[in-house]
Image (cartoon, rainbow, N blue to C red):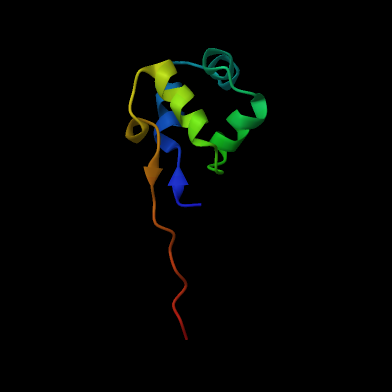
Length: 73
């Protein structure tokens, strides 16, 4: 997956918010927080909920990182 949530995870760490606290604040399940933590796809409604919780833009919590392609032989 080319979408990474490093920015969100960094924000949580800088603010001293645990993943459990984050889940409660944003109304997310622990499974959804695990998906975000492992950079797996989530529904755009989840991104919306996180942005509402932190009053931020999607670009503040996620980043597109192109996947490296294997050289063709």
